[in-house]
Every structure is written in structure tokens, then in C-alpha cells.
Image (cartoon, rainbow, N blue to C red; front, side):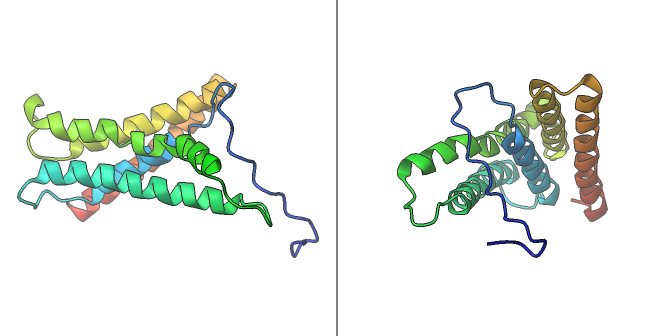
Amino acid sequence: MTTSHGRTPVPPEPVPDRTGDRTDYAGAVYGSMLAASVIAASGFHESHPRLSLILLLVGTGIVFWIAHVYAHVAGQREVGRRVTWSQVRLTGRHEWPLVEAAALPALAVLVSPWLGMGENAWFALGVAVTQQVAWATLGARRAGASSGQAAAEGAVNLLLGLVIVAAKVTVGH
């Protein structure tokens, strides 16, 4: 099979087997951005707003994790071969940082009133954006990027996070 450009498509790389040092922080970066988006879109109008937001963060992370696992397994399926549970488990472990990225923002939602921040989501949003920038920068450094390249990746992720913050301000939640 060839593309419209006359080239044979290159299949995606398989999920790493975790034997070497991991430099792929995509799940953690994406999960952090997802958590920031969930927080930005949420409102504190429910009867138990903190519990609702915590459940929404964790639930959304799990649903997106399942979707990513399915997409990777289905997308990497070899013609004529069955998908094995071993492949699903390996992909699930690889994509798990997407769920883990909801943990710190959820914890921030839980403790914010005890830190004198009241019933708002701004602290959690700040935590989500901060960890997004940190994961992107750490991933770049662990992959051997120069300090300048790592700073650029951090800056791009900060800009993306600030777009989410701007959306929250604009919507007024």
C-alpha cells in the first residue's frame, strides 16, 4: 500500500518494553493538560464541589487512559494477528501516567480549603499547569536535549497551559 505521495507508510513504533530509561513523558504531559482542561471547564455549582471535581479529574483520566490503550493496541495491530492480553497490559502500563497526572491536581482540590484558598479551583489549575511544564522539561532533559531545547519545550507547555487558564478566565468559572 502506498500513500498519495507514492511512499509506503511507516508503521508506528511499538510501545517500549520499559527495559531502558524512559524519556517518553507524553502521557504525563497530556494527562496534565487534560486535568487542567477539566478544572478550567468545571464549575463549583454542585452540592459537593470538591468531591465532584476530584471524581471528574480521576474519572476523566481513566476514560482517556482506556481510550489511549485501545487506540494504541488497535493502531499497532499486525495484519492477521490477534491482540494479546500481554500487549494490552504493556500498553496500559505505558499509558498509565495519563491517569497519574490527575493525582496532584485532585490532591490540590482536596487540600485547598485547608490552605486558606477556599472553594475554588485556581490552585489545582496552577498545579496542573506546573506539572505539565515540569514533565515536558524533564522529558526533554532525560532525552538528552540541551538546556535551551528543554527550556523551549517548557515554554511551549507553559503557553499551552496559559491558553487553558485564559479560557477559564473568559468563561468565568
